[in-house]
Image 1: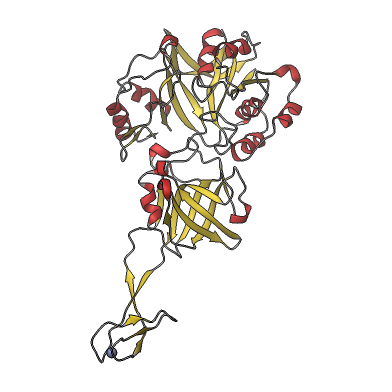
Image 2: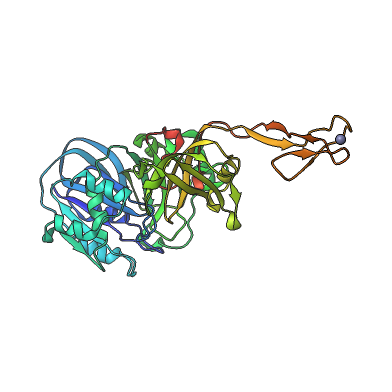
Length: 423
Ligand SMILES: [Zn+2]
């Protein structure tokens, strides 16, 4: 059965790669076999459009169990458990040519395959950098199509190769064509209601920063997207959303919230574009820098690195500011500049004792001694007697355990703590 992989039909300003799914299903007479896949790839690669999303879908003549997963116009969309081989009855490149923006950074690609590709391709594309020329050698020439360069072949093939091991769902609704662009109405309190009342959903509303996260921030065909681990809850939650009218919606199987991008590493193994989990000690107390950046130097027995928390991570930076020399941490994060890891979440394994040194009292004169400035000794300025400082322990404000960036700053692939930790 034809498995279609598509990448990069959006630009920084318009469209959304996932929308092509709707146009394919609108035009084909074939059925969806399994859910359409929405696959996020390496978030650290600069050669990417907005969300670094690719999609994949399998078409055929469906039979067996079917599930309701969406609506296009008046038509209900079902996905079938099994399918019979059928020839593709639509011209996908012409759909992409019609909807894809003409932007030098948009490099659409379609790959059509009769079987899933090896999962290693997916893991390479979500964790590292894959050269599109390697992909070209792998697929027969009449099985792919590109426009404006061939970089998109990586995402299109990676989406086909995603093994769907750690999965979540996203229900995405789309505006009618004539309404694309501009501002759209998606009620904030509906997003908040879903966040608070559907425990299987995630990243709908940032309760701390009052941010509606189901509504896109750029001009796109997407009206809203609800993420979750139970597709029936997503259909149910849809009834609670007050918004302007959507023309279609569909549920995707996704790798969002999978932490598939994260690999356990030693500090000296971290390379540019990696996302890593490192076990480190805090080497220097954190410092606040210009632009709201908080930086803390950490290291293991192989080397050291600056762990940073940028302004968009908001209140999370208050956690990082409270770290102290000697704390033992697991840090999850990505590297887009050498020597730096951008923190996505941390697990504080143990907290060190924070000690301050205070001047001792001179027993003769009953006054506080002053620091001699040498060797950590103190001296009485009246009688000259020497003394050692008093060590006082300050109670730590942090507790051991996991902390994550707020919803407003969360990456698609980052696994929210409420879903449990896997990596
Ligand atoms: Zn004295």
